[in-house]
Amino acid sequence: MERERRANSQSAQNGQRPHGRARQRAYLIAVVPDGDEEQLSELRELLRTAGVADVGELIQRRDHPHPNTYLGAGKLDELKAELAGSDANLVACDDELSPRQERNLEKALGLPVIDRTAIILDIFASHAHTAEGKLQVELAQLEYNLARMRGLWTHLERLGAGRIDGGIGTRGPGETQIETDRRLARDRISALKRKLENVRSSRSVMRAERERTHLPSVALAGYTNAGKSTLLNALTGASVGVRDRLFHTLDPTTRLLRTGGRDYLLTDTVGFIRKLPHQLVEAFGATLEETRLADLILHVVDASVPEDELLAMTRAVEDVLAEINAEAVPEILVLAKADRIDDERRAELQRRHPGAVLVSAVTGEGLDALMQRIEDEFARTLQDVELLIPYEDGARLAELHAVAGDLEREDTPDGVRVMARLPAPVAARYQAYALSRPYA
Image (cartoon, rainbow, N blue to C red; front, side, top):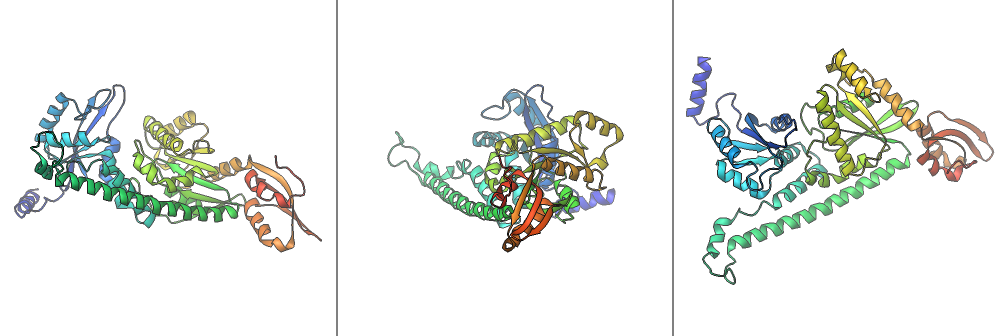
């Protein structure tokens, strides 16, 4: 212990950070209405993912944050006293702050202040690896920062001060610089939106190519770090990267799932979170579109968390699904990480969520039951069809084998007579070959 103390002391003398001490140490603050159970656990986990340590927290109970300083005057004085005795070198807020609130807090506290949105954007920036992901993150960051450019050049605005009426001659270089920066930012935002529109078009082409194969699509949706990527790997044999951190998956990953003699496309998308910044929902529109256009959603929830937290996570995901107009897509609730819960919790989950499927991607528990549920969901939409496929359209026959699984076929002089059960949307695509017309 004494050796470690001397090492830390020597490090301090050399201007280095003492061993084991985080470079960024945040004091957490939040405003919560009476009756809400806000424990700041999610903000703490966000900071951990971003590499920031937490050294304390302060929660104020009030209906709405103060419009100027977020916290009320009394709580702000209390926070100053707490910060004086802490090791914090920044303050982290659990809500998105207005530019005015952020400036006033920094002025009152004498420390940098970051809000929830800035933390999430920073995590996204560090986790974005593909060109599309980087474009989406940059767009969200620019839109977030655009309103916060005021004040960066106030030291130059004084050059235009001292005039009586604020009219001609008062436009100092500070104001000019702000306008220039904003114009450059808006130009870059427009350019990014054009690039992302091209990405959306390219993704639509790829999606159309997948639809040409008539394979049903299943999307994995859920709270970040709920176990979606691990489940994708377990169901498809893929090797998608998995880490115990928030927002590890940003770019959609699609793999082939075969069950019951049929092929399905299974897509893992970006995880959701409570108070997901609107900038991210807009910027990741092309990615989230994979969820909206799916035939079935597997809503993955971490079953190892307490019930109230599970319900809060479920509501947060449902809110985002509604925001992207995906609430009408059929959905199966998947309770993941069953290997982490005891028998008492299992019984509680079965009682509270009777229609859910309990699975463990680690042990394989419940995976067969989940695949059976997927088959059953699509079976409800199946129609009996009788088709005559000309011999020259052998490719369509191969497609039918992939999407229909088991089918009956008979070679006739005019072509191959096929009897199969197909999902309604797929059946409609083969209407030109139909011998009978079951299409309503």
